[in-house]
Length: 241
Image (spheres, rainbow, N blue to C red):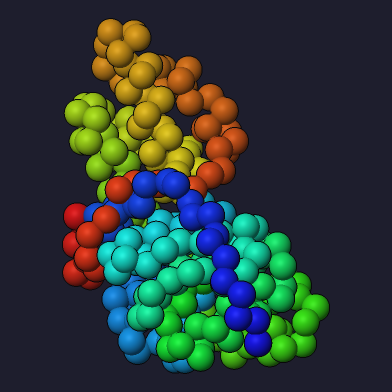
């Protein structure tokens, strides 16, 4: 077992907020698990789902609420130097640069009873690893998938972004946007930001024409990224915070 400990680079991005989530069928199961890390089997849990679906947001929200550091799989080279009792979150875990470093991290957390939260695009059992011991541990891990956001969730997120920017957009225009934007929270945030800038430059309200001009490539589905927001404690189910 490796005992050497390294100071690992942590992501500098501001942690996102629980308040960006409306608990619905897409993320309610994950939220329930994330609120109870002591109940995770073997004290480890993995989130999975395609890009821009909210995995990073949930992972960072959980980590920040509990004071856990967030490590990045591509930067993983050794064990972190942490006080006893701290949990860990590893984002992009399926992109871990070194399989042995990931195996040592799993073993180290298990030996010390540290909670470990992972996130990746595929369930851990499908990660293309070569080490048999690592493959075995990944197959035995509890995994929760993040489903595509519901229509209600996307509409609520778009409204929230407009409200945050104090941008008045007619409901008919919002409905038009929801039919054409990529179905991700990231797209809702990007659309609101672009429309805010475009309305300011144009000196008028948001219309379909302005939206078409400002969001042309986005309306074609050209945007695919993860959203980031600022965090609190776990939200009650069904409440938009």
